[in-house]
Structures are given as structure tokens and as C-alpha cells.
Image (cartoon, rainbow, N blue to C red; front, side, top):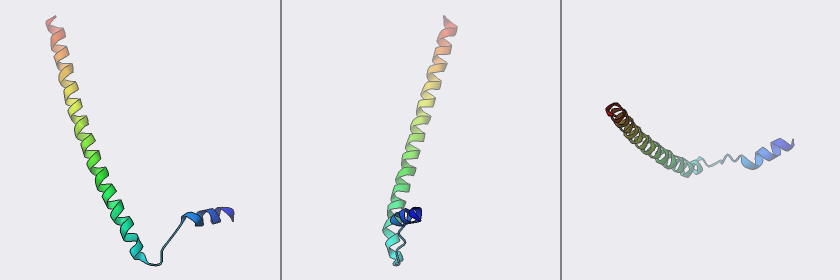
Length: 66
């Protein structure tokens, strides 16, 4: 009984379904922003990986010449 009362405090299903429109727009904006952020992080990670591989190869070449 107490748990159903607590859940009812947080659940709200409006009769007028147009109240979902602002929430949908906000969710879409945040999803697009999250995707852009994810892609930026992926690109930065790829650049760092290539830079590290280049440095490792230079270290190997330098070690062979010594």
C-alpha cells in the first residue's frame, strides 16, 4: 500500500497528450547533443591512437639504430 502511494507521487500521465510534445522536443535535442558529443570523443580518441602508434613506431626505429 505504501509503495503504491510513493509510486503515484512520481507517475503522472496527463489527459491532454499535447503535454508530451515539449518533453519529446527536449529529449530529441539532448539525444542529438549526446550523439555529437559521442562522435567528437570518438574522433579525438582515434587521433590520440594514431599519435601513440606513430610515437611507438619512432621509438622502435630509434631503438634499432642504437
